[in-house]
Length: 135
Figure 1 (cartoon, one colour):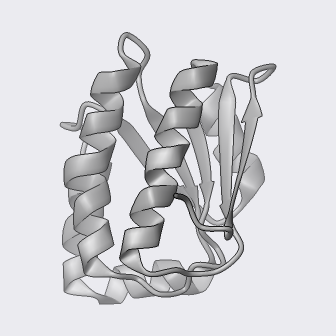
Figure 2: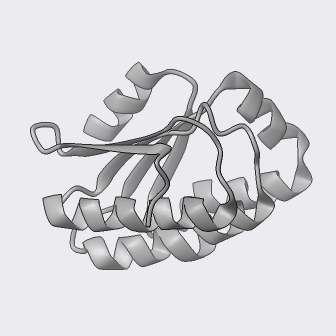
């Protein structure tokens, strides 16, 4: 069951699914949220996602590893033939943590690599994130 902190807004008119978290949650609940995100994406045929994580201020390395190495590849396979594109809307503080934490850098570098079967980018403003998703 997804946490009550997640709001999912399918935008079939734009071909985008928006996921916003109101706060942080334990890893198991966040994993359930991502599972619901994928189920909603499949129901609506949406492979371009805006993930608003600005209010999730705890950066759990376990979740970072799971999303980049397990969840996004699994979602990619389930959404074929569409390409999974994920724009992560982050706070500036979160980006500083990414820059200063070697473990987070490792997962981020992996997820952002052009070698992935999905596309992942980070943004601190929603406008550029939406532009990238719609390009």
